[in-house]
Amino acid sequence: MAFRFRKFPVYKEAVQFRKEIKDLAENFPKKEIYILFSQIVRAADSIVLNIAEGADRGTDLDFARFLNNSLTSVNEVVGCLDLALIDKYITQELHEKFLQKAEELANQLTAFRKSLLDKPTK
Image: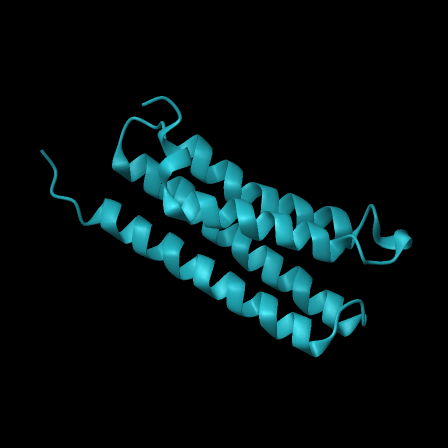
């Protein structure tokens, strides 16, 4: 099947997470459009795009590297959420809600990556 990444549950979760992050960031002040807004959306995009790009690599090891890149982008989103909380662009409640979503996505990426690395080589 072409575009096999589209059937992965983690890809679908990442797409949903990206949508929710972008919707959240739309409420940041306009002065942040080229700063924090741009950074958090690019990081969320990177989660999705690394899954897509890595899925068609020649080996599971290569794909696992791209999943690791996705995971580091989740960390970047969390850092942006922390800054948004500090700057009072989001409430503590929203911060906790999105941290939970980020943790769930990170756990899925980690498990998927581990499953690729644990496969016996042929």
